[in-house]
Every structure is written in C-alpha cells, then in structure tokens.
Image (cartoon, rainbow, N blue to C red; front, side, top):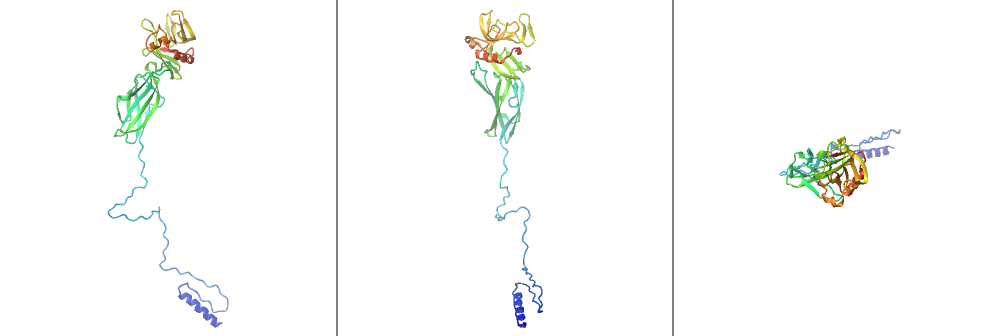
Length: 319
C-alpha cells in the first residue's frame, strides 16, 4: 500500500511540473475523500476579445502621402430633374378674347428660357376642315421668370391647345407640356349655360350647353339692304314682336315671301319673321359674310346637327 501511494504522488507531481494544471494530491488516509479539483491555468498574456464599437468600417490601407483621401460618398446625389409645368390656366379651363391672361409656370433644373405657343383648328364648314393656326406667344423666347401677361386674341375656334417648352442656357430643349383650353368670344360673356349666341361682325354662331360651347358654325346674316335685328331674351320690336329665344321649330318651313323652303327652321322672333335655317348648296360659298334676307343661314349639315340639339325656349342672343 505504501508503495502504491508513493507511485501516485510521483505521477501527480509530474503533471504539476509539466504545467498542465494544479493538482491536489490525495490524502494518504485510507478513507475515501472528495474528488480532486482541477483549476485551468490561463496564459499570463491572455487578452479579452475586441468588441466592435459603432458602425463597422472595413479596413482600408492608407493612401500614399502625395494623395489626399477621398471621403466622397459611393452614391452621388441625384441632380434636380429638368421639367416645366403650367400652373395657370388649368387644363380644360376657359379663356376669353381680350383678357389680359396671367400665364404662370414652374420649372425644375437650370431652365434658362421658355417658349409658349398655341394651336387650333379653324371653324369647320359642314363638318369639313377649314385649315389650322399655330402661333408663338410674344413671338419670341421668354426669359424664365415664371409668368407672362398675354392679351388673348380673337380665334376662329372654340377650343385650342396651349403648349410650353423649356430650354437650357445653350438653347437645348429640355421638356415640354401642353393642355386643352375652351375659348369664348368677348361678345358672349355672361350668357346662360344653355343658349345660342350669334356674332354678326364675325359671322359665327355658337351653341352653349352646360356652360360650354358644343357647336360653332359659319353663318350668313343679313346682306346690305336687309336687317338681322340685335336681340336677347326679353327683346321686343313693334313689327316683329318678341325676340330672343327659339319660339318654334320645323324640319322644313315654307317662306311665303321668298317662296322657298327653309330646312331645319328655328324661329327666333314670335312673329316668325326671322329664324335660323339651312341654306341651299349654291349659297355655301357665301357663308362667312352677310348674304341673307335677314335670317341666319347655315350649311345644311351644320343646320341638321344644331336642329337636333336645340329645344324650343332656348335663349338666343344676336350681337
């Protein structure tokens, strides 16, 4: 037993001197004791692991001394886009002949100048095209101030397109926008939402429905020596009676005085002395200038359209 104990002590001593761990030698007492406790030995130069602080930044080598480090972001900011946008008038708005209209617009990017222009189709005759018009507003490029006062001219139409184009300082076109507008002659301001308006000086007829012009026709009023009376609802003439509305309609009325048929007749005096009707094809070439005996003549195709839209009692204004 003594020899065995001596051998165990020698083995434990060998382990301690080899640097593996501190070992407590068992008691030489024969009684069983607690199991030996082994304490790990940490190396004297052990260092705690590094904890990251803040956002992780990958290592980059220092640039050469003759170069300055580039701290610019990897993604460059997006430059303000080039654009132009009309803010007045608004799309499908109405403009009036003779008004000093304040045109305003907004731009993005270095817009140096703008050009504004308008385009419309002339009043058709019997549904056939009669040419178109396109004009530059102010007849030149405009400095980008964001506004311009435009005196609205006479136009032979009831609708038009307004366009604006933006240019940089080299004259290069950047962007362009357009809108549709309603057009009203100055003589017909203040009419009821539904009405017929006739302008003798222009030889044009307009039919308004829900406050907008739905039809525009080339007409002929009285030639020299005859008379188409000025009128509005409530007008009265001793010879012709009340005037200023559609008093009656007939698909084909007979004129006893001139012994001719008047298709798509609409009386605008209570006596029936004056009305709106279609003329014969031989007189189409005269439409657009005074040529009638006092009535308001139209192309047959236009008269048919208007006749189907207008009701008895519709107000009539002759200016």
